[in-house]
Image (tube, rainbow, N blue to C red; front, top):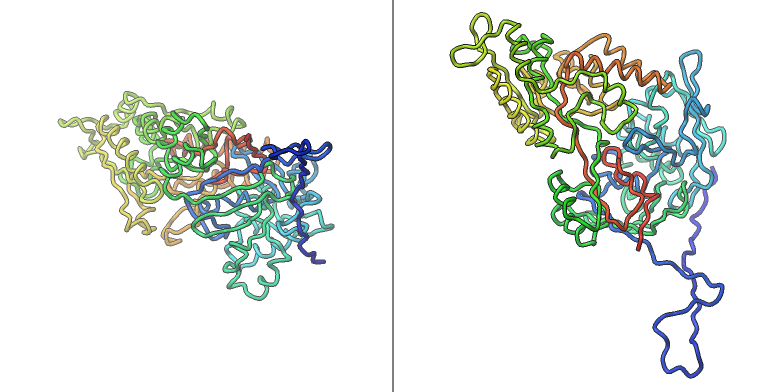
Length: 572
């Protein structure tokens, strides 16, 4: 492959100025453009605040990588509402446009046509060969940081010409159109001309290259001018970006770990945008008095808080009875929990599907709601043979108390989970169930067996939508046979069903969108009808933008607030 040097960019514009009138004693304060001369516009510049030092290495958390959409575009991206947009690719492959083809032998093929003129930040053309190299690195078992389970479905990839990437798949795979999309675990594409030698000669030190910080050369709308670890970055608009030069000229990325300081910056105008504000309470307070900007609330970050029952050796054993699970479900005032812990911004979940996806509205209208109804709960338990003792608490037929533990996770939003567990325990106590909230202590958070074998119910967060489907399967169930350790997402309830296993596998093999929605509907109905999981509230992301900043997408995927920063603009 021919290597091209780095052509310089001539970015200065000359403005001719002249004095008016002979013998003037002083030059005028303003300058007047000569006829026909172009007047340079003011530089469009914004400050983007992040709470953690930026990093683009694939080993880092998504929170640390929230600036990656500014620097490294993939073939496509998503808008947080399950809509997919083409970036370096000219089109998103689909059955309708012929770029996604299902073969009679059960294999399939996707074709990505790259946009002509797209360049790496150093001016080198982006070609299909770069994506072949990225796949080579990603499928190398010696480079696990760049891999994903999705690569197991790829048989081969080729580049019939510099602007065409063809991927042959061993089997149908529903996320094939998201290849090299930041919202999927593929990672950003890698420039072969800069990294190939290091890949072959120093795999162990590959992630230690200066390429991953101050020398980063990406494919995104902005390129690195300077990078001061722990302080921030200076980014400049990339003239060779696939979708054309961004409208904003410069972005000053500032690391502001203190959210009070970050919010104060928004209020005073020294910060133009932020992808997180620390908490919903802080976001609401800012929303209620901030007149020079807008606070955005987002359901696309891919998580919900749930309560799951134990299906293997539970205590009490009645948990495996759907009637019992239904009684306890309708005895929870989930609206109170959502209003308290999601600040009234989340609806009470009907399923694990995010509420910002209109394609599933018709499906959710068919689901049982499990609305708060303590009278119904008491009647179900009475029909099951539970009666109240002298203390008003329920007892089973032999006279033993009906007691359950409501355990809450120690990681993530531990305080919120504990508060939810306390509300649930109190609700159940009101109908006579001796419910006890119990928190997982931090020192036991890594005890896989203890976490998996909770006796009654467990409050924790889980992924939503297709990201969490594998967490409903038998293969994702922590058992003694796998030392209670499975790749995330895990099947926390340990509910297993051959029918559900088959449907999840079918979903990822189903390409036509209408058929895929039908399969999703059947999966949702099993989880909701069987109450293998009950949602308490959806995770609500928060972001903010000043009124001078326009074009910011109202919903974003995971931590990718600047997913469409190439379209942002400012009104000076």
